[in-house]
Structure formats: structure tokens, C-alpha cells
Amino acid sequence: MSAPTDGPGVTPATAPRAGEPGAIRARLPYLRLPLLACAALAVVAVPTAALLRGPTGAAGVAAGIALVIVSYLISGLSVAWADAVHPRLIMSVGLVTYATKIVILGVAMAAVAATGWPGLPDMGAAIIAAVVVWTGAHLTWALRSPLPSVDRPSDH
Image 1 (cartoon, rainbow, N blue to C red):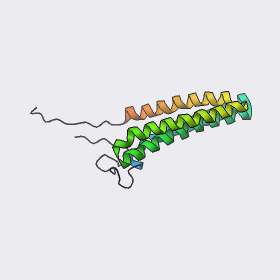
Image 2 (image 1 turned 120 degrees about the vertical axis):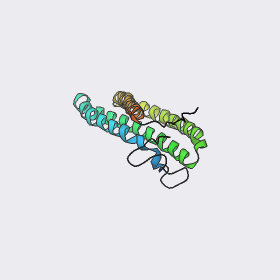
Image 3 (image 1 turned 45 degrees about the vertical axis):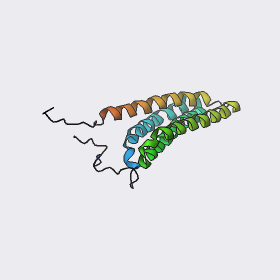
Image 4 (image 1 turned 45 degrees about the horizontal axis):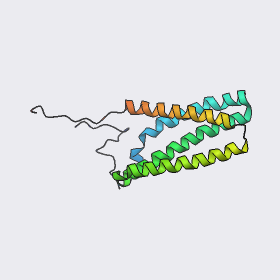
């Protein structure tokens, strides 16, 4: 069997198993590329929003990108934790995390919308852009990562 690498020096053979120290960290190598992509988005979008829409627009864009990053980090960390504790927990922890996030985000966004804050449209546009950037970067990481393979004996 060919061992895929999850990063420099980390292979399934050397990665900590569930319950071992470092098990959560070993399950998070995919975060680097989406975080860098969202940082690049912020470096371009926040000053652009400041020029075009003023400080309120820049604040809305920064808040939107930050919201997406925090949301995806919470999901990634909770699923990595579940997998590190016991892989059978992944689905239930992932679903509970997702449902909880959606409810909290919905209530928070409704509260912000009720204030009439003028940065809300900029925040909404930034959320959409950040989701597209994060998803694209995550997909890029996944497509470039080596997949596990099984070498079958030639006698079968």
C-alpha cells in the first residue's frame, strides 16, 4: 500500500491515532491553504472597500471574511476533535456543530440587520466571496493531496 502524505513528514503510518497526543493537529493540514487564500482576499478586498465604500464598507468586508474564517475553523476543529477522539463521532459532532452555527449566525445576522448598519451589504458580499475563496482553496488542496492506494497482488 502506498502511503499518502498529509504534509512534510506526516504519513498515515506516523500520524497519531485517535486518542493520542497530536491527533487533532494531524487532521488539520488542509487549513493552511484556505486560510492563506482568505488572507489574500482580505488584503485585496478591505482596502478596495475602503476606497469605494468608505470605512463602513471596509469594516463590513473585514467582518464578513472573518465570520467565514471563524465558521469554517469551528467546523474543522470540531470534526478533527471528533475524529481524534473516536471516528464514529464525526457525523454527529459535525451535524450538531453545523446546526448550532446556523442558528447562532441567523440570530446574529438578524440582530445586525435590525440595527440598520450600512455595512451589512458589504458584509454580505464579503461572506459570499470568502465562501467561494475558501471552498476553492479547500478543493484545490484536496485535488492536489495524494490519495491512499492499495497495491493488489498480481495473482488475483
